[in-house]
Image (cartoon, rainbow, N blue to C red; front, side):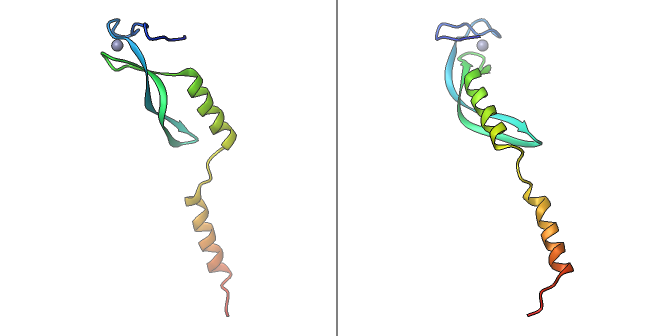
Amino acid sequence: MPHNENDLCPVCHVGRLRLRPVTYTQVYYGLLVSVPNTPAWVCDVCHTVEHDRQSVQRIEALMEHAGPPHRRADRRPAERARTRLYPTDS
Ligand SMILES: [Zn+2]
């Protein structure tokens, strides 16, 4: 649904939706991803936030391109275990 400066808020039917930068948050592969300064439509009365669809699509495309995050916490114990199994004597 496209918005413009004259759009009435669909929630309170009193305020107007205005394009404002907000922080977009989403859980991605179990990690909380937050993107500050994402344009969204915000009601100037009840502060309902409707994210700009084009911006959300761009963020989702970026996250899909990046793929699942590497889990550094899972990798460290394995490296430690390997050091213990094969100690280097010098
Ligand atoms: Zn409103």
